[in-house]
Length: 184
Image (cartoon, rainbow, N blue to C red; front, side, top):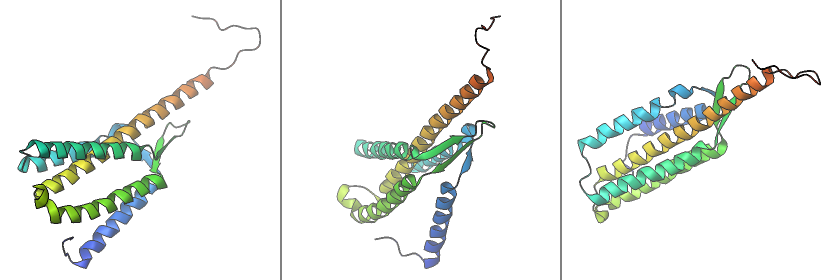
């Protein structure tokens, strides 16, 4: 079962979750050059956490790798539902998560809570500690965030390049009929 914590802790976590959801549903300016910061921070913090009690067996390494790959696959899929737009005049990128992307996130959180409660009760049956289960969930989250950011960065870069190409194409004014452009 989930640990019995005071109600105020659940209320604070719930309020923070609602704020994050609301923020991600609103349009935000995308800075391609800064999309790497959150994933890099997560990778660093996860490496520090895992270095405290590293996996010592091949099955645990396989579980960690599988958790990270599953998170990356889901993150890539969720990233495809992030709507990326470019203002053609200012070349400012904006993005926001669609309702489907938000439903995916809510589903992942719900499933994670259910699985965590069950697995932590039965961890010894799988020859795992609760810490190893927590580490696997942490790697799942890292895979999800990193893959989502990479997918959004690829699409944002492509959209920006397309907008710049279209802007250059429109600057070349058509010539009157019968005239040729001189090279030179």
